[in-house]
Amino acid sequence: MKARAPLPTLLLVAAISLACSERTQPAPIVDLDDQAQQYAAAFCAVDLQCDCQSEFESTEECETEVVAQFNELAQLADFDQECFDEFMAASFWGTCVGGSMIADLTPQCATFVGRGEVGDVCEKYGPLLLLNPDGTCGASTSCHPVTSTCAVPGWYPKLKQVGDACDELTNSCYRSELFCQDGICQLASTAGESCFEPSQCWALSYCAGLSEGPEGVCTALIEVGESCDPDGPLSCLPVPDDAARCNPTTGVCEVPAPYLCFLFP
Image 1: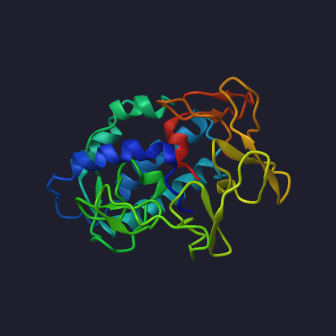
Image 2 (image 1 turned 60 degrees about the vertical axis):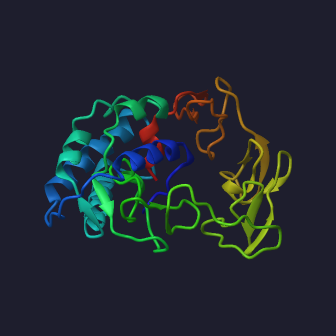
Image 3 (image 1 turned 135 degrees about the horizontal axis):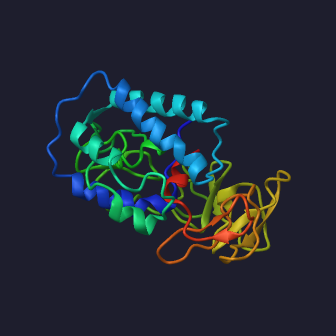
């Protein structure tokens, strides 16, 4: 399972990407099993430490999946041992800090740099996002979050209109007020309207009720400190510098949400 990059990661990923664009990349290392095991152990420990409530049923399952993704990426990208060592020595492990703080604790380099060129289909590996901010794309390019192709940073696809064809997998209408349904761009739902997908609602609302049945209702995002549904989708209103989450233990919206939790499926 490969998690998509969540929205709170985009600014941090962009900062790391720019800092690494001029870094000379060493030749790839063939056997990275020890590094894969080391990273998986540290990353998967966060699931319990920060109560991330990921889809993994056990730490062993998490480590197996992360090692597999690490080894897969190693075949598609060049590896920087020095940068990897900096990440493993960083002070953010186990601290459960939010995105505004982890940016200051993250080494400004990329452990993995892909080889894809502009226009190539690309992929990002959620659990490895800190090590590999640009996915399988090469230096000076980045894996675009909606087209899944390598692009020059700052490029954005042409916005679509209601009735245009789209890809439901990437919601390729490229506009928050549009939603891709049945391969056609349609107006997304607002508060009080029915919804059938977590991404169908916009204008500071979320699709409430999907954990109970196939149809929900777009509902205004919940303020920090108010009650929320830990089993539902992201339903808490973010603050300017950090994302919020529904605490799985207290059932209350809290800030900051542990940044590393967003990298788990």
